Image: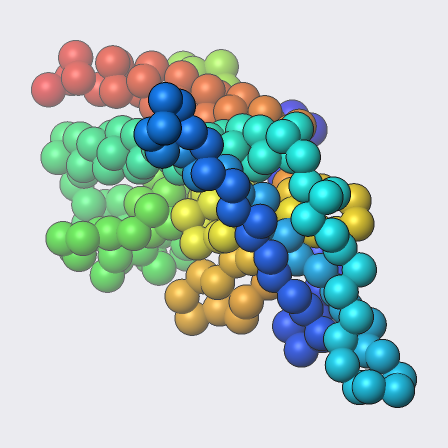
Length: 234
């Protein structure tokens, strides 16, 4: 499965950067119904004589099409966040159901990676990645999961685990990112500050967002199938 993902943008934090939002009130019958914005990051050069930054952008460059483009990307990244929350909830229920039906002590002794999950399994509140790690251990070591076409051999299990791990990494960008345009192309980028990690900038495209939807669909479908089978075992 070839998936386009958010890609790193080489934008140094200490560069001369200006951020402009260009707010525009949207009125209907003299009432404010929306505020359009198009937050744009501009790398500015320094005037050699005055030592002051040179602003290369003008408000006239910001048109309705750009405002609508920002609205659309804002909606799309927000929707991806909501979908990821649904995946998190379903993954939590899937893992808890499996642990209720199986011996967790036996699970952690299956291999070296499973043993690393011993302390995590006993935790009441598990992170998205911790739940995924437990799930990865389960599908790779329990042959009952070979009944699902997506997991019918070890290679497919590893591939799915990687896709799932990357999905969570990308979700973190959307959760902890702020959407901007980058001048002069006005391509969308996100300034991302994940807790305990360095701030970074990533680029996104319509295909990146669409591929995230397809990844959600793939993960959600498999989790639903697994839940259905395991519910019958209760």
